[in-house]
Length: 272
Image 1 (tube, one colour):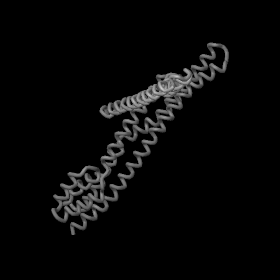
Image 2: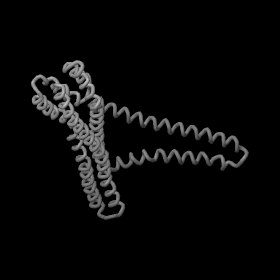
Image 3: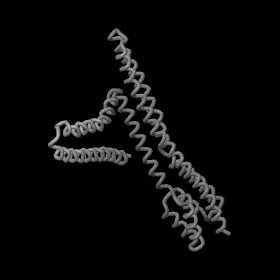
């Protein structure tokens, strides 16, 4: 988990660095164009030569303005609560990415594996089929291997062993989902808490000034609602990842159930 969080931090830093380099290159290219235009139009009026420079400065302000606005809203929305909500986003994304990587690695071409197992049973027997499952990654291959180890005890024992071990593997696939769900619930709650505290501070300012001025009321409400907006955004992002992970787990479970039925049929056919 620590390595994954460190990797995410490095990736974010690299993305910001790449965007900054790209902006610098665009600025350099524009400066070269401005120099050529100024040299060509040196004999014309000074106003024409200064026009591209003014446009360049305005473009730079527009690019920097987005980061400045984010920083401004983050600070205005009570940096303490905004930082906690940001932490939930980082932890939720770390768990989500870890689950996605794990589930993708657990995906197996079950049809190809079943063909290999059936061929190995016909040519080399149970030991050869067991070696095929042992050298194949994924929960399906693990279930097949567990069933082949109990093959000598009969098909009924094999089926019970597959069902029991399948339940264990399902628990591993669903590991971490409860924490992601917790972060999805906590993020908007923290936002609402920041909103309530911001409203209390706004009323304190009104009480201290002794006057309900639009500036005081609007400013307090704005700061209070920023935490709610940020919390809802975090919850939406994590909810998308959560739904994708759940659908991936359901797909793997269905694949496991279908493949185990075919696997038992192959064992019954081979036993005859």
